Amino acid sequence: MKLGRLNHVGVATPSIEKSIAFYRDVMGAEVIREPFDLPAQGVKVCFVDTPNSQIELIEPLGEASPIHGFLAKNPAGGQHHLCYEVPDIHAAKAWFEGKGAKVLGEPRIGAHGTLIFFVHPKDMGGVLTEIMETPKPGAAH
Image (cartoon, rainbow, N blue to C red; front, side, top):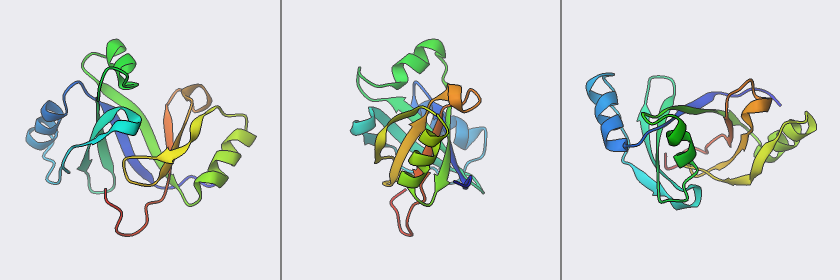
């Protein structure tokens, strides 16, 4: 396993619309993608492009959203996770498990339309970490 490119920083927010205004008006973001629902993950997502990565804004979608717990502890929102790319999601999962890391669930389709999984923060220096298969050329997000 080799550490790949930082794809995005996930930022939980109680309001994607307010966060969009912040990144546009305060941070000077010029490319902000259209928000969309990701029901399988229980979130609404919006990507803000930066010169070398993206910010993934994440808002709860429905009462069962896993983001509710994070926002209960951090009502204003904040950094939720880091996401790194890997060429082969299944090889990466096996590698992390082989190191004794707690992988949270099976690989599933994430917001970029490619396979992802999360690694528990206790095994990643306190940071919830998303591992995603590198998107193929022409991927949606």
